[in-house]
Each structure stands twice: as structure tokens, then as C-alpha cells.
Image 1: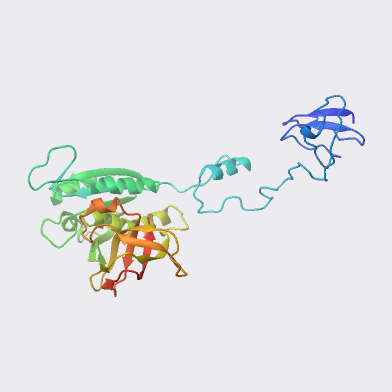
Image 2: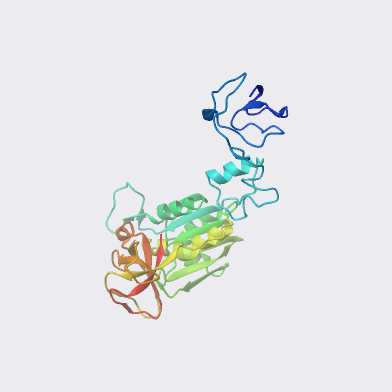
Length: 333
């Protein structure tokens, strides 16, 4: 066949293909009027003036139709989609240079406690290193929040108020840790009671003492002080709320049923969250997926065990004992 024209990618003035002729076309170029298929160059002698074709092709071969990827009028990206590389690429591929997204919340994290010392300062008797703000900041950053931290605020109402109030303008959420229990020197409880924050006890272990409300119009969540209580409370209350505020449609951790590898006990009337390690795979019991064993005891100070956990084992309020080989709910972290 005589080669009547070259059609490189990007050419816009494509001449029609006349009967008895061929066009040399490159990948990504527009198919000329009159053509219904493309022969790959490997099935020809690659001639440029005249070309010999060694194979037949079906109509439509090696042609990409308009609308094959996204048809006109179709939804390309639904609201609530978490944007990754492919989503951003698709937006540009359909001609968009901007997308409406949710603004990341600005979160102020405040850890309280006169006993708290910032690493690597040496400890004196009765002091511990502050860790709650580090954990919360990491968890919030992973959700896409913009985080500011106030670490180791002393157990003094005036000091606490002065440290936080100046930062309330421009803040979307304040999260505190510590100072919400029933003892003396509970600085958060003393400072915020009666001004729009409610404190209560939740029937859970760990993480019983909780509080929430508003401080000068800014939402406030007050978490307990023990580190495991902080992380469990974040999972139970803060993470789902923030994901909802960010426009996510799926805000819950994946929940599965698993078989316990050892006996567990739980206090009556409280929902217990135990750190655990889940091993996937079916032990042959229908909906049960794998096995799970605890990591560490139930103590809310045992943070090291949390680093070995990939899930939370959930024991309901009416469960006081879960024997080995029984089925339990597991929240995958």
C-alpha cells in the first residue's frame, strides 16, 4: 500500500484515509476518518513510502475509543474519595486543574502534668517523660490534620488557661490529656468545668474519665492521662469524628471475628479494649478470620505492649471471661 501521510501524536489536521492507501500512525495519535483499525508496525516491513502488511486485523484493533475510560456524564471521582496519585492523575486527565477538598483541621494538643519532663532532660524522683502529645500528634498527622503541641503544662489552673487561651483563635479542635479524673489537682477538669465542657465516666477500660464540649466556641476533647488510655480513647472517639469532619465516608476500623489463643478476663459492666496481635487466615469456622492473642496486660500504663499490637480485642460490657478458643471481635489497627 502507498503511505499517504504520517500522523504523529498531537497532530490536529489529520487527513482522511483514502481507499487503497495507508497512513503511518504513532501511538496516541488521532485515527483518521476512513480508518477502522491499526496494524502494529511489527507486522509490516516498516516501509515509509510504500508498506507491505503481513497480517490481517479485525475492525477496531489497536484503537482506543472516546469515553472508554470515563464516559461523558459519568462520575469520575465521588465526594468523600481520599485522593491518591491515581485520583489526581484522573482529575487532570479529564481536564480539571482544581478539586474541592476538605480543609485539614487545625488541632491543638495539650498534655498536662507537673510530673512530666521532656526528653532528654534527666528525670528526678517522681517524674516521668512526656509521651502523650507525641502519640496524639502522630495519630492526627496521619489523618491529615495540622497539629500544634503544648507539652507538659503544669497542674495549675491559671497556667493552663493562659497557655491555651492565647492559641484558641484559629484552632478547630483542642485535645488535652490528663487532669480529668476524680483526684485533686485535676487541672483540666478544674479549669473547664462550668464554661462549656462536660466531664463524665464512660463504661470502658481503659479510658473511663472523658470530657468534651466547647471553650470560647472551640470544640474540646479531654482525654485521660495514661498513655494507653489516650490511644484507645483516640481510636474510640476522636478518630471517627475527625474522619467525618474531613469528609470521609468510611470512618470505622475494620472489624473481624477471631479465635482467642488464651483466656481473658474483663471487669463487669465495662467494655474492655485489650491490645492484641491478629494473625489472618481461617481456622475453618465460617466467618471467623484467623486467631488473636493479647499483648501485655490490661493496665493503662503498659505502652510497650501497644508497640507489639496490630489490633484491639473488644470484650463487651456483659463479658467477664473469654476462654481460649472462643470467638471475639477484633478492631484491626
